[in-house]
Amino acid sequence: MRQAIEYTIPSMMKAWVLGEPGELLLVQKPVPQPAAAEVLVRIDAVAFCGTDVEIIGHGLPARVQGGLPFRKNFTPGHEYMGTVVKLGPGVDEFGVGDRVAVEIHAGCGRCERCRMGMYTSCLNYGENYEGHDKGHRANGFTTDGGFAEYAVNHINTLVHVPEGMSDEEATLIVTAGTAMYGLDALGGLIAGEGLAVTGPGPIGLMGVAVGKALGASPVILTGTRDSRLEVGRKLGADYVVNVHKESAVEAVGRITGGGVHYVLECSGSPDSLNEAMDMVNRGGRICLAAFPSKPALVDLAKLVRNNIYVYGIRGEGRGATHRAAALMQQKRFDATLMHTHTFPLEEVPTAFRYCRDRVEDAIKVVVKVGHTSVAAVREDEVICGCSR
Image (cartoon, rainbow, N blue to C red; front, top):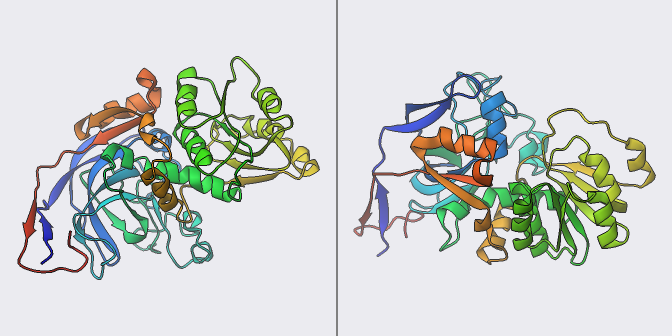
């Protein structure tokens, strides 16, 4: 007889919401209820992302109720993991008690892009409020996210957490998925082809790790902080370049004797695309994965003359998170090297400051959510899809 698990679920929960720009408020909110094709996730850990910093401080790229997310009782946070504690009607793909990491985006499923599988480019982005509900969801961007005790997620956004993986490491599955999506957009890496990653932030570091796991050679990481570059070396970079000490373009040319096949741009520097064009060989490919802070002047003629391809990505699309989780389960790289700080849910503003200001050289700042509710195990019945 299989064991069924039940969780004690409160009616109200702690949640952080946005007030004015840069202001986070701890409030009580009703625990959301899962609808068809959804589950209720008890959030166990959530990591801060650089995009969270932008949303909390400036609003974009979040879009809530048709506009900026401030003063709308909106809970940010999108890199979270947790435990399934309740199933919506008809859900049997996951069971109560399953540990899951989450993707951000659940597309509307009805627009042209979603039908193509490009749900992170859903044409109905943000259309998920009364009078304008097309079915799109992007937790932490257009709907409530993970700086809370519970969240509702569509089953298409869930990834099983591998056995033995810590909560902290599981929050990094989505980051690895974003890097994987960027490399997918470039056409996938063939073993032995060169990859340069510019910017050793979390996505850049994961780009190094995933690229190396897929066989790229050489893998070159450029950045400004020796400590970050050293983490990149441990994650698989064959060469690291401190751009304060040497030109990144000259270093890539020297190392490769002509340029790399691919550049994954994760720095957001205004001149990054021009530099990337000088790093790739003719016919090379560039993926832009960072948000520059201001418009950039780009030598478009160089793109044309050298037949260089440029791609932009949003999030972790096309199931890339599942493939990234598989690499992590296989121990192809140690993502825990990026986890530097941990705070409880009550200290989210402090965690935000550590991430925003890079206090103590913070890379990935994780918030652990403590729960007092316990699971009860019943042995008197069999429940398909809810058993352990």
